[in-house]
Length: 341
Image: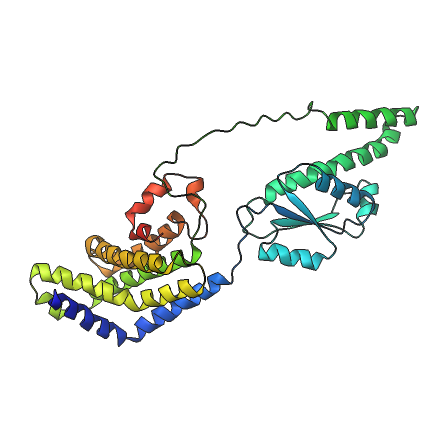
C-alpha cells in the first residue's frame, strides 16, 4: 500500500509542476464565479409585473388581474426601468407595460404596440402569463370593440342594440358557456428516483469540469508514452494509471470544494468532501475502464465534446430535464457524476 501512496504523491508533484494544472483550477474558479453572478428565475416564481396602469382602461385591466383568482401574483410598478431590473434579476417572471398613448389607442380599437411584454430567455411561465393577461385585456377590449362596431352594423336602434350586446358580452364572460375547465390530479410513481426539480449549478459545473480534466489526462497519455508505466507488470500498470487520473484532478477538486463552501451552496462540508472524493475515485475508475474505447487521438477528440454536453443535459445543473423525460434519471448512471449530484 505504501508503494501506491508513493506513486500517487510523485504523480501529484509532477502535475503540480505543470502550468496547465493551475490554469485548470483557475479556469474552474472563474466558471463558478460567473455562475454565481447569473440569476435564473425560480421554478416556483409566480410573480408578474404590471407597469403604467395609471387610469382609464389600463387601470381597469389591472384591477381585473389584481383582484381575480389566478395562478399568478400581479405586482404594480410605477417605473418601467425598475420592473425591467426585477425581470432581469428573476424577482418576477415577466412584465407588461402599458404604452403612454394606451388610452387613445384602446379607445380607437387600435391594439398595435399598446402593450410591451418583457421577459428573459430563461422564463418558464411567460406564455401562460401572457394568456392570463390577455384574458383580462379582452374582457375590456370586447366592450370597446362592440361599441365601435355597433354603429357600422345597425342603422337603427343603435343604443338599444349596444346595450343588448354589452349585456350578452357580460353574460358570456361571467358564465362557463365559453370555457369549461375540469381539473384532475394524477399520481405518478417516482419511487427510487431523486427529487426532480432540484438543480446544482455550482456542484454540477465543478463536476463536469473535473470530468473534462480526467479526459485531458487520458488524452495526454495518448500523445506521450509513460516509460515508467510500460515497465510495470500488468496489474501495477492499471493501478499506476488510475492513480495518475486521481493526481491530475486533485488540485482542481480542492479548489472546487473551497468554491462550493464559500459560494454558500454547500450541502455540508463533510457531505461535499465525501461526495467529491467518491466522485474522483469513481471518475478515475470510469476513465480507466471506458478509456479503452478510444484507441487514437482523433476518435477521442470527437467524443470529448459529446460526453461533456451529454452530462449538461442529463444532470440537474441548470435545468432538470428529467421533469419532462423521467427516463433521464436512469441514464445518469452511465457517468460517474451521479455519485456527486
